[in-house]
Length: 401
Image (cartoon, rainbow, N blue to C red):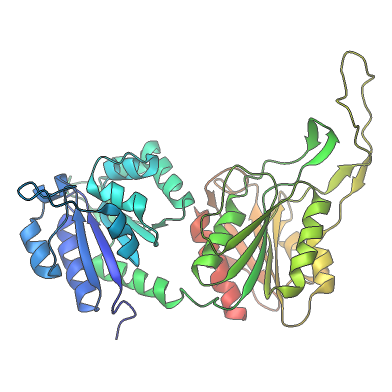
């Protein structure tokens, strides 16, 4: 019996030639035992008829906000609450843009905005549209919201060209959903501590020493753990993003010492700790209680002192039942430095990113990592969205449980 048996799935269909694949996808979901409600855009009905979809789903197809002849209202809120997941396949460039920016002018987008469950997006379009910066930006933005992007394949396209843009095959989408739900509770009963973002070390009331970390990687890890059933404590430096999953408790801090203090409070209760924050290595020895004025003060000499090493401190305190994961962002001698930190800080695993890799590092929505574990060869991963990288990292942690 498929793990999808009994699941409530909203299948969103947009107006693209790949809509013909959605019929097969619907049939496979029904065969797996899922209850499926189709929501189709007006343009989608130009490619596949509601009669076909209704016959397969055994449910009226929803397209408009209300039924014209009866005035019956279709509640996108109710659909969003009913669903165990929402799958949008195919997702056109137009719909991706509307979803990314909250343009709620059709039933599909309003249902997406009301969804409380995981959302899976399978883009399909011509290769030039797919690789256009606006499409890539929208996909990255949607991924940063916690949506799951099912990457399109490469091959022969409806335009006659060949390239990336083919909607993933229905069988693979079903497999993707089954894999997701099969591990949806593999962290149930576990308490995970995650650090994220930068730390700010004050020079005076308005200036600080910090770095360019956006917190996106740490927050993606927190969302991934929570989606898999974990209770998550997220100790976050100053960032502009917020955690979405209610299973995440966010503790906001500013400095490295504050972050260490909060981590030490929680660490004894946790099974897994992931030190993803970009903690400042140094802090000013003193902090002025007033703004240093250029007009009246001499050029200040700032004496720095070392900040505590949070990962190493927890590594010295951890017990045999705890898993401690560190991060290393390097500019040179990447492998050597990562391996040294793995053992020196008593870590069980370390995730390496290199500042020399395009699309990796601070402030971007993608990352390219290598994972080091004790007594095993490094695992190198290609460039992916940070949400996808979070999945890879947590998959490796789960193997160690």
